[in-house]
Image 1 (tube, rainbow, N blue to C red):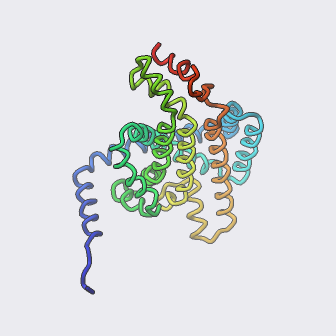
Image 2: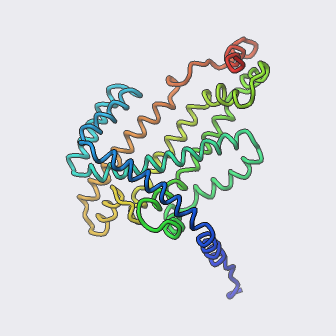
Image 3: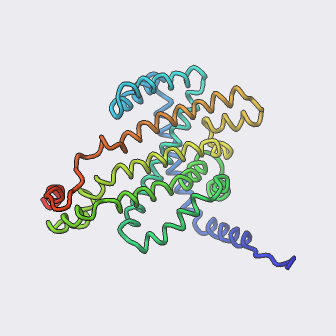
Amino acid sequence: MENLRLPLGDWIEGVVDFLGDTLGWLFDAIAIVLGSVYEGLEWMLRTPPFWVIIVLIAAVAYLVKGWKLAVGTIGGLLLIVLVDQWENAMDTLALVLVASVVATAISIPVGIWAARNEHVSRVVRPVLDFLQTMPAFVYLIPAIIFFGVGAVPGMIATILFALAPGVRLTELGIRGVDKEVVEAGHAFGATPGRILRQIQLPLAMPSIMAGVNQIIMLSLSMVVIAGIVGAGGLGGEITRAIGRINVGLGFEAGISIVIIAMILDRVTSAFATPDRKRKVGKPVRGSSTATEQAQPASA
């Protein structure tokens, strides 16, 4: 029994080598696309004067939540400027936005598919469990092997780490739509695609936006880990602070991450609150509400 060992690690290493040799062209293409988008967004955030970006972000905060969030956004971003972490913060914001958009673009369709197909749901569920329970540092190993060092492997690891809640909450939101409303849509002759677009997605939007919010928060939690592989930004600053045992630098970079996380959290969570939902009442059994909701679907 002492010499009994399953060479699982060797098998996985062989699979990784095979993928690298066979799909190297695909990984190179992904790296080029993600790297180009990240560099373009980074340039857009860093080139204008800091006050222009602050005004734009504050305007978005005002539109979705009100003047209190706008004032808090201005104060938080000015603090980042005063501690001389603005450029690093914009690098981090660019990385988080690109990773969050890609993760959202993958998770919402997969969540919809899983909600509409029980077989897909059974396959997706253990995969999501695996992604959520795997230690975050482990994602960096294949990311480095396939994509080298820099911002791209950091984004790849972030995307894999943040996917699960988006899929789960999208599936939960679609499944939570009242079946009577969906049946009313079928009764009026609406196609499955129109029912999805005009009934299920609007009613599930709070849950979907909660999933997007969680994707962004998990992406920010990976910033420091991504800094280890040369992603730069605030994660790189914290990595350097740890190496030098520089408490001041670590605190300044850390508080900057917290400020960005709070702003993004408040902005995205505003879309998940009930007062922002499309004004469609919950149907009452025996009433005509379900019919009124489903009728536009067949128009």
